[in-house]
Amino acid sequence: MLGFPAFTGHGEPGRQGHSEAATRASVESALHAAADFEAGGITVSVSGSYVILEGFVRRRGDVERAVEIAEGVVGRCYVRARLLRR
Image 1 (spheres, helix red, strand yellow):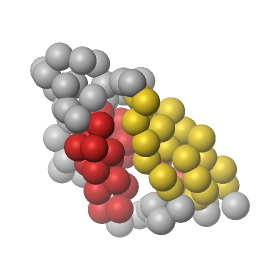
Image 2 (image 1 turned 90 degrees about the vertical axis):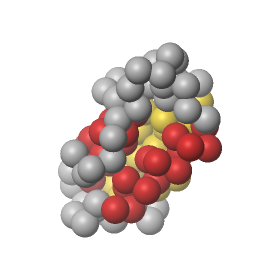
Image 3 (image 1 turned 90 degrees about the horizontal axis):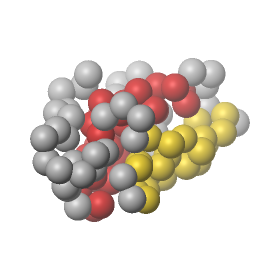
Image 4 (image 1 turned 60 degrees about the vertical axis):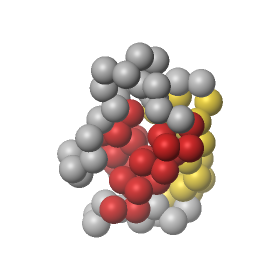
């Protein structure tokens, strides 16, 4: 965990009652704060209860790392990755 608290106990699963903009900003901040990860090619969007990661990563394992970081913010099972490795 990067020190970004998970959204818990606020109603709707996934975003837990936070606005889409707040959820997107929190996930983007967590991705960019990760020292072992390059998030410049990732776009974060929100669709319903799910956070969607789209774009490109550079290294093997970065897709899993991006999902792990996002799940640390919104919770497990609420992240969908549409990421490709270049």
